[in-house]
Length: 151
Image (cartoon, rainbow, N blue to C red):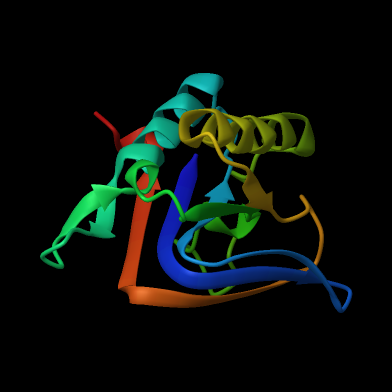
């Protein structure tokens, strides 16, 4: 699994012209699921996301985790394009992307695990929908985490 985590001052998902979900201060997490990803990958990424110290402390140093920022929220959006291979040619290949039977349960499990770890709801996109995602990146702070690169 691969995540792109962005610290935001606000984020939203619109589908077919209708606002679907939104958050204020928090994290926008784009979630890509690849073939072979497991619950262990999801668990590791959720724990890492919840404890990553990327919010400023009283001195302005990135030293605080989202778990310690009560007003901060998470928005998680599935994004199969994170699995793109660009090694050959100019058209990305998505052959490594997990199918719905694997990707949907892992995405939903990630969202639920984040809710469990943080004790607050996670705003979501809609798996497979054509979504317009808007955000204001704060910092900017953008972190990419791949569960296959954890060792």
